[in-house]
Image 1 (cartoon, rainbow, N blue to C red):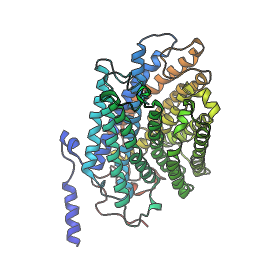
Image 2: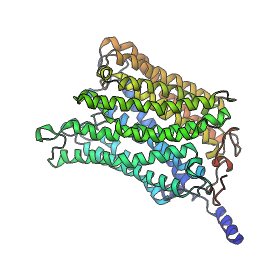
Image 3: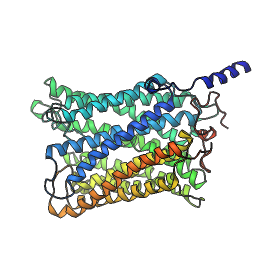
Image 4: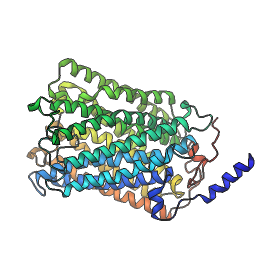
Length: 528
């Protein structure tokens, strides 16, 4: 037996990564694929951010300044689509790829070849979507929610390409999810029961089930669109006996679980970072797991809160209002647990901690504006205004994006074996924090005053808030280029990191040396 072990160990040294570009093309290693996902999502963040800056440049002053309204609509649509499907989701999948095998003590992901395929679909999908800008009639211009008949009867000819791109993104998500579920359920180290799993693993397990449940629904919606456009059906065309409101029901049945898909892994990340820098165990582990599970279940019965103004029956409105408010309870449990984790802890505020604390504060703010939107009579006032934009950007930017940035700073020494420059990291945090609040806080006010979403021009009374918002957007946008500088500087010339890079960090991944070896855990660790 010992011989076998020895030969395994010996092989381990020979089997490093291939050299050159082919390594990245053919790789089945979870760390390589995680890295590919993370760099791809960063590129998409920069492209999606550039589109947002075009939007904010146009809205800096009232009147049509720089771009055509039709092009403005393409910007708003593609900004939403690229950020949701190209920046946030692949970044979480990249983190899952890197961290889950190390956190459960597995040698790799369960289905390595499928893992490679699920990544390499993405560049083609987004390449196709971005190429629509250069086609006759321009790119998608009907908002990221692509409501029929705007997208079917009145959409540009490139809509078909957009539909195919969405299908590919969905396929990638489903394959990634199957892989994550298979890894977590089958490849945990001996002794690691489900209730001993790190919270990031738990949140991703639940997220993966959500993805498998709702991605086919989105695929159904876009296939019906395709048929309406090309094959003479009338799923969403009232003149042919269809119903455009049905599109909204199908879309949001996917869309609301989707917004939880974009935040649950963030909950997991923050539940790792706060205990590490408070130097205390996470408060209420079991309740955290149950809270995530109940959020996931409830996410399926709240979708029509996006549609209070379509003419729903009163009972429907009352049900979805109630269900939406109930989701605040498990979310509140999580926030209280995070605060209790920090309570009387011996806290230090390194960059990951700063981003995690900002996450807790600003995500909670975004949650409260969501509760305001859940009130039906109030929603009649807020619906389709900038208040909604402010709400979802507060949960997606300081929520999802800050948690991803926190994770990158937190596990960076484990990935690269180098430490980033702490003072530059803190500078990046403060620029981002100030930028994000200057951008999105004023939007609450312009929304409450009645400024509609998705418009290239606006009435004079909204001018000041829009100017402030645009200045904030440029601060926030360019601070992410600074983030890239901090990372590349850390990779090239950062000082060497220890195996345990953070004093309070717990978990199997911190038992490995830094940088983590190409094949970690060839012998499964024992978990007591």
